[in-house]
Image: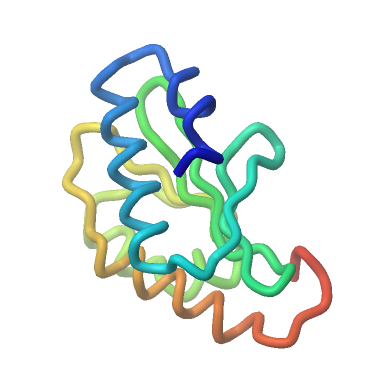
Length: 122
């Protein structure tokens, strides 16, 4: 988590800081083998050199960016949770409950789907 501490501290709202810390900690704890890095000014999780997921903050929400294939595959579950989705990101309002099972499905899909990929992006 040390990799992400400066990023977390850059979030102005202390409640949002704690929520981001919780999210990044959950991912780090459940997927300790994923490499942690800051890229494009946001926390990234990487597996064997390929991008798995990014998390970033905004004023009214935080975003998960798992790439188009994962957003498309899980769009129904995303919307069922009341989250918003574009083609490439999932927006979750700070006050919405977090569906960690959905996070797990997205991360595991990307790990399996991108297995053996030699590039960062699909």
